[in-house]
Image 1 (cartoon, rainbow, N blue to C red):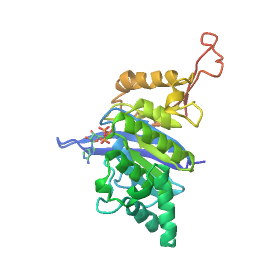
Image 2 (image 1 turned 90 degrees about the vertical axis):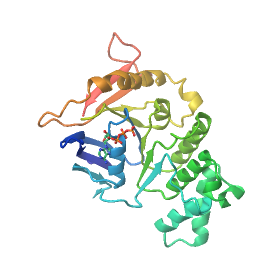
Image 3 (image 1 turned 30 degrees about the vertical axis):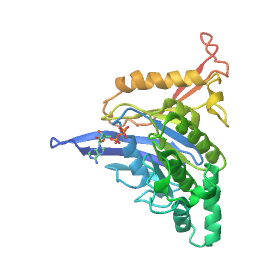
Length: 301
Ligand SMILES: Nc1ncnc2c1ncn2[C@@H]1O[C@H](COP(=O)(O)OP(=O)(O)OP(=O)(O)O)[C@@H](O)[C@H]1O
């Protein structure tokens, strides 16, 4: 059976500026299950935003397709919500109106009171309540604005929520607080999320799975690393879990070394560009007598 979101043999080429073509990625094939939180990690330029734009329906791939809930993704839709680093709010509207705007578009049959109650609830979930929701978003701090865009995205409950480095512009303290709020709000909903970040610790905290991309051009989604740390997670507690540093080291090794070694290898005819599944679990005894602590399985699926 197909996954809820199925990315099938996706290829993107752009003009290389010298009269030829540059292949960003080729035949990339992977899936995301309903309610899953998937993070994609990779060096600058490997094609993460390109994948995100295609998933959002904001760009067409050179070849391949994206199927969500049985339908091909073509063009933007309210079924897919996007949160960008730069918030993309409507600065002339109040905080509340920035949320009700999308909710009433998604649920035109709802009464005004119902739309406002729903929107207010989601703003409160990210710590925005009281007078602040009647202030224009141009009068809010960066962290508050990002809270509004997260509340707005979750309040619409899209089939797929795309987060493009949503915390990139925030200071570390604010970032931590909003990560916690994002986890809380996500934990209360069955929301499928696909997120780009450059922050390994953020990825481990939030994700069910991390997709690792090799360097571009000719990048690949080479690995799918399961985050074998139970939920609910908190930033202070996950570092004590026995799997935390094993997973972190694996990611650091990939980004520091193997993303370069595996880079730029064109596809062989008939080869499938699917990520290998990596499961690291130090809490389960290994079959390998040499290694009694770590279970590391790479399954080419
Ligand atoms: N519209 C375009 N025309 C030509 N080349 C493009 C276009 N969009 C992206 N590229 C190229 O495609 C490659 C992938 O870009 P993309 O923005 O997807 O990378 P990224 O992994 O998101 O990088 P970063 O982490 O820096 O945001 C880059 O080499 C970029 O220059």
